[in-house]
Image (tube, rainbow, N blue to C red; front, side, top):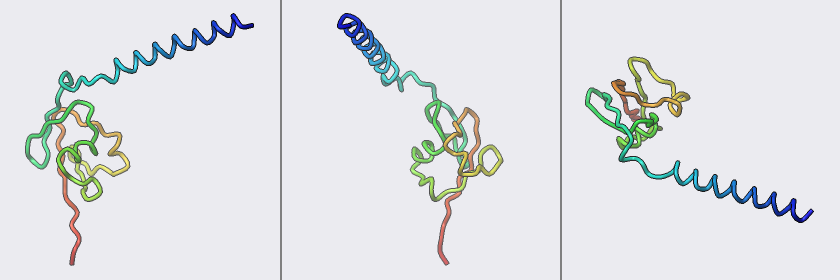
Length: 102
């Protein structure tokens, strides 16, 4: 019984070490190797890292996502789709700031 328990613990330990090593490899900062994407925002050329989502881009551009409306490639993009919208090369965005007042 003890031998089986020891082998089971050793096997779990080796898997944990393997997963920990794999996690370190995956999470290493490779931003310098990541491709950049070029797009148009309000008629001006902008760039971001490949894989950037729309809210991340808005934050990068110092825009508050709560206070803007976005036209994405000619279509108004409903807010529910923002998190899943990944910016691609040659995308065209028009970002309009919502202004209150009277």
